[in-house]
Every structure is written in C-alpha cells, then in structure tokens.
Length: 258
Ligand code: HXC
Image (cartoon, rainbow, N blue to C red; front, side):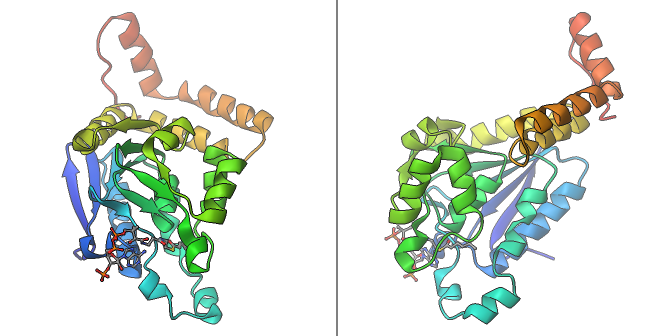
C-alpha cells in the first residue's frame, strides 16, 4: 500500500521519511500518523536499513496535531479512541535509531514527534514549542514530560504555560537538539550521520540505544547495572571480537552483524 502524506526513500542503508503535507505545514492528521507507522514497520523489517531519518520541509517539520481534525471531538471520542498518542508511540518502539532533521516549525505534536526520535539535528531556522495552551488544551503526546527532561523544569514550564517558541540557538544551548547546521546542509548532514550509524555493528548499535533510553526510565544505579550487563553481553558477539581485532591490526572492521 502506498502513502498519502509522507515520502519514503532508501538512501544506501538509511530509510528516509519526509513528512509531506505542505498545505497544512505537515499537521499530523490521523492518515499521516498511520502512514508513518507503516513506513517504520517496513523499515524495521528491512535488513538493509540500519537507521532512519525523519524530516519535513524547510518551512515546517510539523506544525502540530491537526487542529481542524481535533476541533469537533468530544471527551468520549478521544478517550475511547485513545486519541492520539497510540499511533504516534510507534516511533518510540522502533529499535533502529531515528534521527529527526528539523527545519522550520516543530510545534505541539511536531515537537513531541521530534522528541520521540533518538536525537534532533536542527536547521538554523528551526523553532520548537508547545503552544497547545493557546488553543485551549495541553500537550498530549509526551510534551510536558519529554521537554522537561530535555531542557529542565523552568524552560519547559514557561513554554507549556505561555506557548513561547524556542529558536535553534536556544534549543541547542538547552540540550533539546544535538547540533545546528545550515538549512541547506540539514538533510545531507542527517543522512551522513545516519549512514555512519548504519555502517556500524547493528546489534551493538541497538544495545547502545537501549542503554541510553534506559536512563530515562530508571534510577542511576539500576541504569548503570543494566549498562554493565549489556556491556558484558557485547563480549558474546562476533562484532566485538572483530572490532577490537581490527583496531589492533590497524584495519577497518568488517561487521558481521552477529
Ligand atoms: C491544522 C494547520 C496547523 C495545524 C497550520 N495549519 N498548522 N492546520 N493543524 N496544527 C494550516 C493553516 O490552517 C493553514 O491552512 C496552513 O496550514 C498554513 O498555515 P498559516 O497559519 O497560514 O501559516 P503561517 O501564518 O506561516 O503560520 C505558521 C504557524 C501557524 C505559526 C505554524 O500555522 C500555527 O500557529 N499553527 C498552529 C500551531 C499549533 O498550535 N500547534 C499545536 C497544535 S495542537 P489554510 O487552509 O488556512 O491555508 C497539538 C496537540 C498535540 O499539536 C497533542 C498530541 C496528542
């Protein structure tokens, strides 16, 4: 089945998903979220793909959940459908790394989707915000939780209570994004970074991702213990033997993904 609201490509070992609903600034309607979930299912199942890049347009990564689609819903509609988070959480269950390449607006659900990815590379014109308060609601897909973990309570509280947007410089300073690059280099930089990850040992990459994510879910001592167990288990892989042998022999490793 094809996609209506996204473009899906394979660039070497990287799956590229481009949100493509330009007339609505990539507002995240139900159809778009469904498309995104199916694309991630396909990429997860494709052994040739080692990492994913999720991007939008130069004007908007995504301007939020689709306000027009939401406006007529009542409590029972959203409660019984578990609106809207259910579909979006597919991003957080993807085992392969996902990089968000964000230019322009990443607002409301758009900011939440970017934060569900593993890290964010921002174009110079990126703007992040949780402006739901200005339309009579609150973030509903992790915005109050993830933004607070990224940038701390003071900034997150101000943004959620006032709807103030954060530009790329502030987002980098605050730890929301890993790097800022010029807009015209955003996609190539994100693809290059993803290709670099895809060129490493697949199982070891998955383990590293799992461990960093663990830090959000548990105490420091439990997280460190978890990391140590996973670290030990890398020694049961062929790729750990290959990686260390290649270093000692001054050659490039040949990963077996085993
Ligand atoms: C539906 C949207 C939209 C949205 C923009 N559009 N954002 N449609 N849902 N979130 C549509 C506009 O209606 C308009 O359509 C077209 O996109 C272009 O938008 P403009 O407003 O004309 O563009 P501009 O003046 O450049 O302003 C850009 C903007 C503004 C600042 C990003 O569009 C804006 O404030 N958008 C809403 C941002 C927001 O509140 N997001 C949070 C949504 S709530 P027409 O047909 O008029 O041309 C949310 C809850 C998440 O995300 C909960 C998760 C479960």
